[in-house]
Image 1 (cartoon, helix red, strand yellow):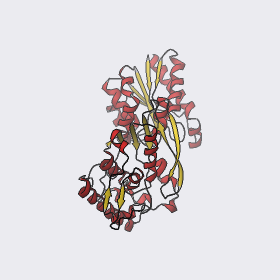
Image 2: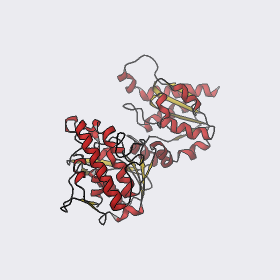
Image 3: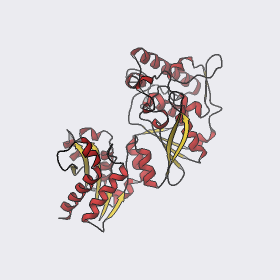
Image 4: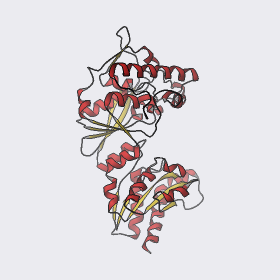
Length: 375
């Protein structure tokens, strides 16, 4: 028998790899000779680097970069086992969690550190990038990232623009001559699960600005600045990115990646499935186990278990999903590739106890499912 074990992390309890190993323990207790293929999963957000690095026996690279407010921070990215692919979570260098709520100010925050991570990976010989752009503290249209890679943004007095979305209204000219030449030779995949345009009522500033510290007046200014940024890009580069789906992701970082780095924006789970080679493993499987901390009706909207189930459904492979919490609306999942959804808790418990005993509970639940399958 072949089991493909492809869970996401159970947040605050287990990494995706630890969850898969717990599942394996449960399977082996009933089917000691079964083949268990461990494929730690993620959805392109937090945990993606860890999952793909562990899947490919790669390594975590740490380096000093400029953080969201110009301070020095230690950021990291993943170098996959073949040595040619980098996985970057922009939040590691330019994320909201790097600054306190009182410090949040999208007029000032920059994506410069994200560009430094890309450059560091290029120096390592990387030819393919997967960039997750969730959790940003920024609203600069990716200008900081591009400055780190050699693009020059100047005002009418030929001065380089300072960091932050608050300076974009001064943009007069764009000089691409200094852009790192290696960018043209690499593949740039971007995990992006939002479809917001760069500007407007559903744009980067209006929808995501407030959580980054923007007041109502700041939202208005930032939106106008990004509109100006987009106009200059259209006039000087011929790229119309103001209303493209996903351009507003990460404070407009999506727009910068599209316009300057020829990036491809895709759903995070689809990219992780591609990078892990999950489909090849599922084709010949007898069962697929997946799961994450919470499963409910929202799981259908791009969450990891649904992505895994969709692949398994193509090959008529049964899918068992495990969760610490099963919420409302799960009935719809049974019509979308899920065979069963199993809660892993043994009884009434505190949240602290549930998180602490996650691996034990998951292994026990997987074992019980396998005892049923053995019948």
